[in-house]
Length: 235
Image 1 (cartoon, rainbow, N blue to C red):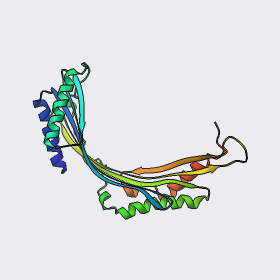
Image 2 (image 1 turned 30 degrees about the vertical axis):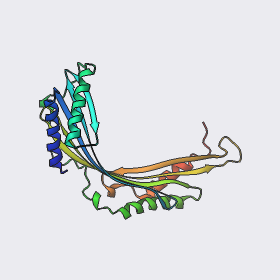
Image 3 (image 1 turned 120 degrees about the horizontal axis):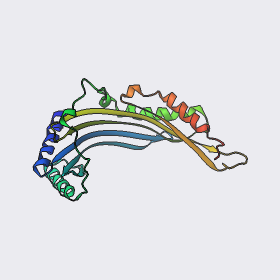
Image 4 (image 1 turned 90 degrees about the vertical axis):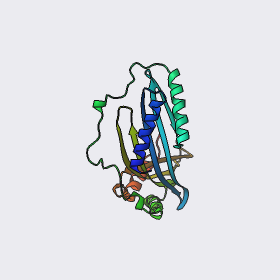
């Protein structure tokens, strides 16, 4: 769905909840695209690409609140979800302090929130894999004792619409990119508590835009340093 389609769908869902007997209603409609790749010892161990949708509907009757969720956004599923929520709300304990914000308190942020990377989709899969492999190579090159535990790159794109029965409805989009490394080292002192043990640690960088992530060299250096510091550790 486009952003406008999501907004209309979300508003329609709130109206349907009121028509079904709810006194107040609020919905969260989410569309998500996700990618993640994990490499170890120069080979891909896991690669996931997915697209998903979900809806959460919170409704109340006489300050008795219920929350129902589904990943099926079909008309039939949403109708059944609303009916289940109304039935559930009627048997819930009453919360005298529950209420939606007053309509006068609702508003929208002005301008661009700068949460979305418009170049996210343009980053090729091959480049995402290469970033994870580069990170692992950097770590292995820093110290021969390092054992790779997993290097990964992931990014996600989310579009969210939030309406309520007080007339509010708005949407926003956001992206998240993460480059992460986990590594280990054998802790083999001649004698002591740690004989036969393996020490491990990690580091990662997260940013709205992939270009703002820390460089692979920096992430690797921090992860390796944190791991080596644990050699000889004791309680």
